[in-house]
Structure formats: C-alpha cells, structure tokens
Amino acid sequence: MTARLRGIGSSDQGNVRTPRINYADLGSISIPIPPLQEQSRIADFLDAETARIEKIAATAKRGRRLLDERRWATVHSFVTGADRSGPHYDPMLGWVRQIPDDWPVVRLKHVADLGSGHTPSRTHAEYWKDCTIPWISLFDVGGMRDVRQTRLTETVQKISELGMENSSACLHPAGTVVLSRTASVGFSTVMGVDMAVSQHFVTWTCGNSLLPDYLLHTLRSMRQYFESVQVGTTNVTVFMPDLQSIKIPLPSTTEQNSIVKRIGAITDNIDLLAARFDSQVSLLAERRQALITAAVTGQIDVSTASGRNVTEGITS
Image 1: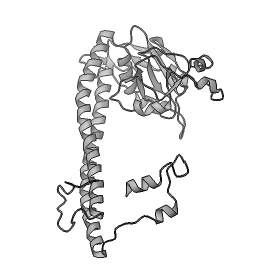
Image 2: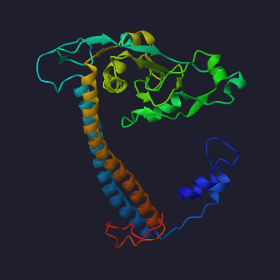
Image 3: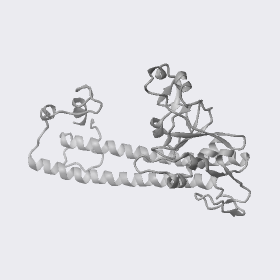
Image 4: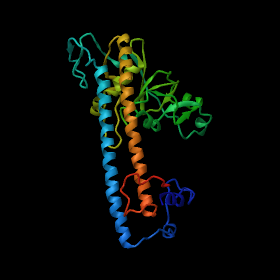
C-alpha cells in the first residue's frame, strides 16, 4: 500500500517538488476488508507483535546511544590527557578541567591559519557554469555529523574558478580542518582534497606544531564550548570573535600522533559495535513493516501465528 501511495503521489503528478495525492486518486484505492471479527484479531495480533519488536528496537537504540557517549568520552579523555599519570593543572578553558603539566595551552589561531569562505553571487549565472571546485556548504553537514568519518573528499555542490575569483571564497589545501559555525554548529572534518567553503564554515590550516587529526578530535570534544557560545534560537551561529579566541592544549607532535592512533584503535571497535546496532534497528523496522503487510493482506493466519519467524517466506 505504501508503494501504491508513493506511486500515485509521485512528482509526475503536476511536477511538484513535494509528493502529494489528490482526493480522486485516494478515493479510487481498493483495500481488502475482512469480517470485523477478523479485523479485531489482526489488530490485536499486530498490537502485540509490533510492541514486542519496538521494545527490542528501543533496547538497541539505547545501546547505540551509550556507544556514542562512550566514543565521545574516549576522544575527550585522550585529547585532554586524562589518561596520563602524573601532575595535572586546570587550564581554565571551560570545556576541560585538567590537562598534564607539560602540555601548554595556546590560542588556536597562533598555531593554525584561520580562514573562512563565501558564496559566489547567484545573480551571475556565469559564476555557476563549469563548476569543478569542491565547495563545502550546509548540504555537507549531514556527512560531517558522522563522527566515524574523518575526511571529506566529495561535496554536494561545486563552484567555478570565475565564481571564486569574484567572491571572497578561496581554495584551502587538503588537510585543512573545517568547522560548521552556522545553523548546525560545531560539526567538523578534514579536507581530503583542496576545497573552498561557504561563509557558514571556519577553517584552520595547521602549522608544523599541530596535526590536523589531533585538532579534529579536539574540536569534536569541545561540544560544550560551542553550545555555550552559540547565539540564536532557530538560526544559531558562532561569531568569529569566539572562534578567534579558542584555546587548546598542545602536546608535542609525537604525542599528538600517538593520541590519534590510540583514539583510532579504540573507536574502530566502538564503531563496529555501533554498526551492528544500526543494522539491528534497520532489520527490526523492515520486519515490523513486513509483518503489518502480511497480516492485513492475509499472507499469515494471525489466529495461529506465534509471532516467531512470521515473516519467513513473506514478500514485502
């Protein structure tokens, strides 16, 4: 039935962007109507079975959330030296209480070149022809939300050489760290290739004393800071002065490299478990839909079905 509705309400019905269905099409749909007693049995069966599936799914989702929290705690622990023995001190950063005594605190803009970008004028059509330059826009934030991804190599949109030349956009080198500062605030990644960005992002091109991956993990552990400085309700933003004032702990590059490797080793295992939870939730959703379809179309006899393996042999 869902497929039927999607077909009727597809974009070819008036070439609309949002699919819709009119009353005539809706009224022409035929559905099987079993006797009321059978309808009641089907409803009771589905109530019980979908509740069981949803309970299992809720447990899986809860496990997935706990893994997300564990992952963040792992990264935060390493980039702040919480796993280190020996004396620590309060760096007065707000988002971390203690770091090792031998880790200095530096203003980020002093160890990485701060940059941003722009959107070429949309009123000049010629700026949007022959677009070959990867350009990070808000359309790419969805991918940046996935903390398992550390490199961005493809962007949803591209800009042209002419557009870049006639705007404040510029090309940032591969390895540049980028952070979203408008709308969806605080999501970060590392450029896998040379890229430009829109004005909704800030970039840091690391100097010799700072590794891009260490900075990436540090920024991802600073969510409390970005939540505290963002302004607005519907369209939130972090202003450039707040970004210019960011300070971070700066261990040696040797230790930074060790931290990055240890984070990778632990989070790889966490991500593997998370993927299993994601797969379980997806399969449970498919099972739920298949069960409903089978029950309301008479593919199973709900008076004898136990709810175990009831989708075996059923076509969705």
